[in-house]
Length: 224
Image 1 (cartoon, helix red, strand yellow):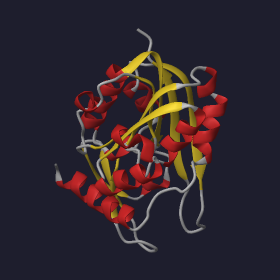
Image 2 (cartoon, one colour; image 1 turned 30 degrees about the horizontal axis):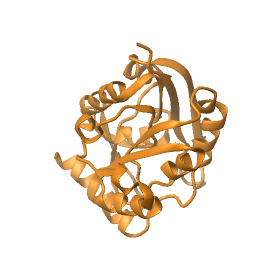
Image 3 (tube, helix red, strand yellow; image 1 turned 90 degrees about the horizontal axis):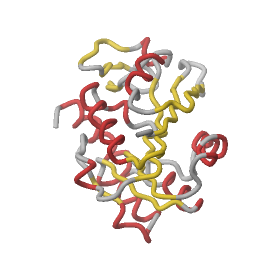
Image 4 (tube, one colour; image 1 turned 180 degrees about the vertical axis):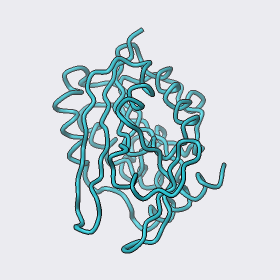
């Protein structure tokens, strides 16, 4: 594992030990399901890539989906298993850049990557997206979020390596974060193997002394 990935993983293991993670599903997940996904898929198997504490998988489970998930953080998967005790054998600790085809011996109706793919460099991101395509059933859906270059993080980066921008925060927190940010055209190119259904955006600004975050929301279909 390269040093950038190790730094990110160590940070999130510490956060999850301290109770990091949503207690309730985020509103955008709920809205995307009700406004888009349910008009194509209402049940089946869902894979959450980097599922964290499993709270979004639990939401889909309550809707009638069969949940599967993986995360590079051991601490995250511990929490996910607590949140979904009846599906512990569907939750896996995976390498930072996993071979999903060796972990999951099934195909999925829906694959979700929420606030997770952009911690990978360009080469590894394309690899994982190709794995998503292989793991999806025909007519299956993919739902991902991607950090946009219009996010205020873009104005803070010091250098870029293999698609990862080193963002330097100063003030409230003094940390470096390595993230992958894409334009709309780059986002569409990444998912060109899929048929685009919708590409939306979500932005928010919580603190007055910070800029606006900006993420693309991409929903596509596998068509063979």
